[in-house]
Amino acid sequence: MSATAATMAQIPAAPATQKGRMIGYFAMVIGMFMAILDIQIVSSSLAEIQAGLSASADEISWVQTSYLIAEVIMIPFSGYLSRLLSTRVLFTISAASFTLASLGCAMATNLETMIVLRALQGFLGGAMIPTVFASTYMMFPREKMAGATVIIGLVATLAPTIGPTFGGYLTQLFSWHWLFLINIVPGIIVCLLVWNFIDIDKPNYALLKGFDYIGLGALAVFLGSLEYVLEEGTRNDWFADAAIRNFAVACGIGAVLFFWRSLTYANPIVDLKAFRNRNFATGCLFSLTIGIGLYGLVYLLPLYLGRVRGLNSLQIGEVMFVTGLAQFMSAPMAGILARKVDPRPVLAFGFALLGASTWIMTGLTGDWQFDELLLPQIMRGAALMFCIVPINVIALGTLPQDELKNASGLYNLTRNLGGAFGLAAINTIMTERTNFHWNRLVDFVNPGRVEVQQYIDSIANMFGDRTAADQTAFAMKMLGNKVQAQAYIMSFIDVFVILSVLFFVAAIAVVFAQRPKPAPAGAGGGH
Image (cartoon, rainbow, N blue to C red; front, side, top):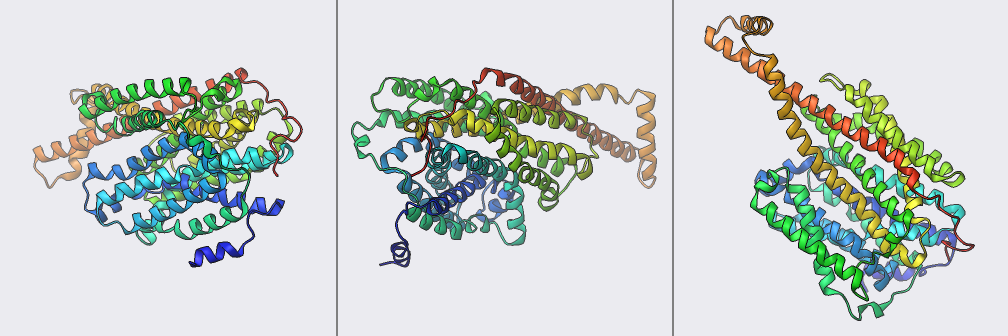
């Protein structure tokens, strides 16, 4: 018997005590944290991985893209697998596979191996995220659900926030291999605890009868192609690139086939009937919106601090730390409100606060640093908690338990797709608006204007040891760089304006959600 098997045999299997369930649940939450963190942890260290694997700049992006494509396919598929295998078996397999794939990534010596292992890591580990959300509503009685919802909400928002900074810190302190090695010990512990302390449902092997292979293939083509188009579109000039056009066509065909099978097949891979629940449908739209805000702002601020302010990953982490701290500080209040009051006003307040935080950012200049970013980051951290907790309650809190597993996968998928749509839109808007502002600013820096000529002369005179032609050329280059920087900052402002409008509209749209009705006695409780 192996050491792991011996250890597992020594722990009593799935005790029916509240303490045992809590141990298993917190282990699942840690596993979910690892899976979400791994989406972002690599992003700040792609240059180091590129050097270590002797890859090109175009090729290395697949280390991230392969993970995201594989994960986005697994998330909706996980509901079917959870019903087939049981929560305990699926989560243990997912955590163990994720851990082994992490070890493989750390040992990879070439790009091809890394891409395959990252795809396995994303696909097999992706089941942990929706499984935790579904288990929360299966394990806890109504009066204790608010606290559990706060925990998973905090994890779902905190992991992307600290991911890039934590990854940069590990790479600078040790090496890029530790981006993956950091998963090994927690992964083993999670596997042991979940296997021995979680037993909330039974497998249903009858689902294997009539397995929808066509639906699964359509799901993979639809979501995989969609994720590729969103990830690579901006980099490859969208539909000017043949590969983007081909994947867009594949996405459309896969989507039509997937929805047809899901709506007509007797045993579909993904059951869409949860969308008949008005609160679930509106909750998914809010989840899509919060995905745009969460991943978009995690991307924008480090981009500004790195490219405009010239900070390294550790310095960026010190600035971004405020958001995570605000999330921790506001989590208890979000939990109290979720338990005591109608979640809709809380959600409206959260979106309004998030919109206010991005509106403050519309005053951005090239000199902003910690002091200027302090207030909007505090507001953003608190707003994320006041959004994600009530969204969880609105979307999942009123569904019957037999729909929770499928619904949880769909719900988490919308947040990931929101992030993908948001990043694609942000990159596209910034590219277009930077060019727009550059063209407008160039009109104002015409050397024929007296003020502009005086500025050029003042710079040129600083380099009296050069020829007149060199002085002028250098002054023009400095002026061009200054104009480019201003155009870039103005594009940031445009994005923050658009995000502000989006969040304010979402705050108003909360009126379309119904107040979640209390669950019937005994519903949603544990064993």
